Length: 532
Image (cartoon, rainbow, N blue to C red; front, side, top):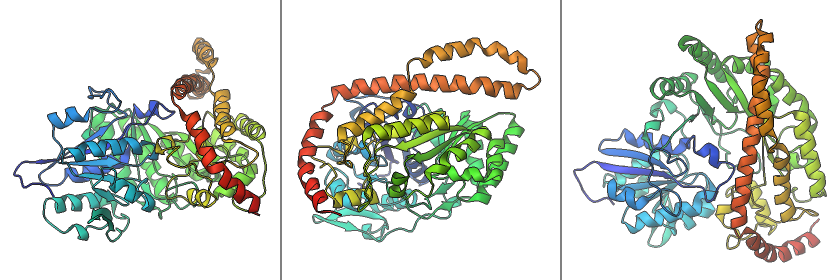
């Protein structure tokens, strides 16, 4: 409980730093996570409370940094003492840092609250023994308000739905909280609460949840949507108060609520015409939405320029194992439709996905790499991201691999490696863990190369050729800009990969992997020998 006081109280919400430089580090310096901002905005409306969000990956406006990385919390607590600290556990790879921060504040006598996708059933006990006093299960906007009121002595802890805590050494989980459905009751996310950050790309949302059943994904709840007017209100507010121009709609699948999505696109188109400014919008969308011509037309008119598509794999057997509802043979034709409609296409892939139990499928690393490269080349993707399968807590993939004894133990390969860049389980034969990791880098290395620096320069010199398109400047600009932008992105990707490789060489993951394989290998070999 909080000590009685007439002073205003402060909630500090912290987004922990990534454990090391990775492919997300660059974009993290220009954006922030939406969930913590939503929670902070809900508390900001409470009488007597001040709120701030500290994003350790984005401290570009005079943020106090510690020598070991992340923010200097000793300095923050001296300058602006927090009465309660919230910790964002949305990314499993940041959990070790999250626990480090939690133990620091708990040592100062500050109550700590953790929330996010990592904190599913099997991890709640771990969290409560690692410096977290209270775990919020599920969405946090309503739960955090009730929990803070209870800590002020205004209610019973057991009456707060959707939390877990320790009582006499035992884990207590209260009644589950129903997912939010009326988003109009919530304040618009207030990015001014994020201290020290320079935000160029603003995350916004309209739909929470996902109707798909991908085995590797943690998002399983029924889709729930806000009205189109609410999302437009948020975007227009950010444009007019913060000068925002670039947006990422974080909905897991843009277009799940089709009529509302088209209505939003129409509103956004009209808004841009009224203010005479063009906004840059990126969305995540299903590949098969290419068949919906009306939706694609509305998206283009709204200024949506880039679509991020989870292709996952060009190998049919892997798609079936993932429970992806798309056929490999349809992928190229559907991608072509997105290109013809004028979209930049960012392709997201998972390399080396393990087959479902009982499925007989053998393919070596070299052949898999060949198929991925061939598909990426034929699809003419603008940018790509190739990650390794991550058996995240709470997913069907983790349950399956743990049941087979294939997941490398946390004592060898900890949560900090759960970012998609490291092998975390014994792969299907004949591929080895080392081959799986090298193959992902091989595919990305073929796409992002140093030579594109020269292409960027050459493309700049070709800019005067736009004079031949004076009759149709829009078409001429598109023909010039797309390759220039892609060359720039591919050179930038090479720089990122080079830096990641440098950081990897400083780490002792190779030794940890050898130990992990020794622990898992014998058991899995016996299981495989007696299996189907």
